[in-house]
Length: 134
Image (cartoon, rainbow, N blue to C red):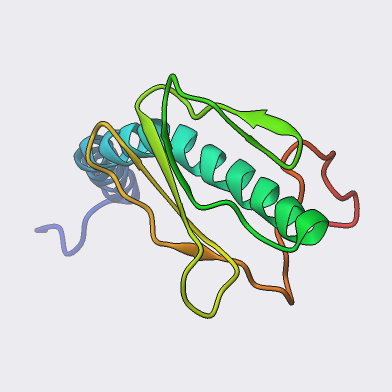
């Protein structure tokens, strides 16, 4: 009598093999995403810090500080010294309807969008402990 369907163990083995092949095919993509995240993390951390410092400058003095600073250079804002990460450039513009906008880039050619002050959701201190309610 000829078999009419695959045995359950054969289907299970084929399913596992297909899953392993799918994961192996996704590995290079996951590695590229991870590499991109690792190389852009310092610039986004610098942007978050600069947004906070500019916000403090606006609330303390009434104005933001336009600037362009790269790794190895330092600038004083709101009573704190800021030095960007190696390979990162931080630009702050103070033109237009927003009090300030911050953009960062790195030596790999990655460039962030402009992050402008949203007075309804101002930046938070990147050095503050996380909110336990989140």
